[in-house]
Length: 157
Image (spheres, rainbow, N blue to C red):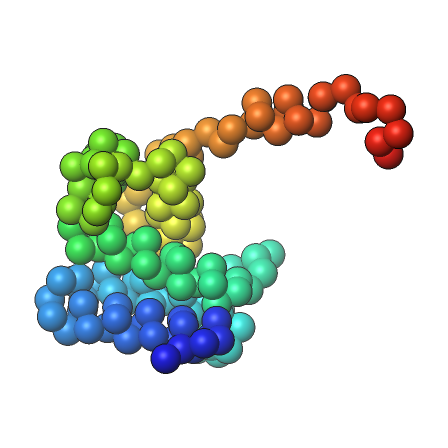
């Protein structure tokens, strides 16, 4: 059983490759996902990361791989449109997507799927502009409420 983040990433890659071998993910999309993950993996030397970008942790790479695989099981990401992808995200939110096991995904969970898509399309030169994949707004008002709450006496500033 995988215990380190690097081992968990390797296990996730094996699962991904099995989905590709089974025909659940098309070869073009699989190559594009592999390239993205390799580019941001400091242990891979075959693909250069984008200039000005940093390497990502195995946990982040694993998350991207999983989330992109969910979309890739539905369509070829190398030719998908932003409208199709946004419809997939909406279906996830409404609980109508095949990958959603519960009633629906929260907006916070959806944001991680949207962020993975944006990273994918920001790296590759496909027809989708990453800006056309909106990110659900975070609960900034809650953070604002917490940071503007009056301090009780004796609390540090």
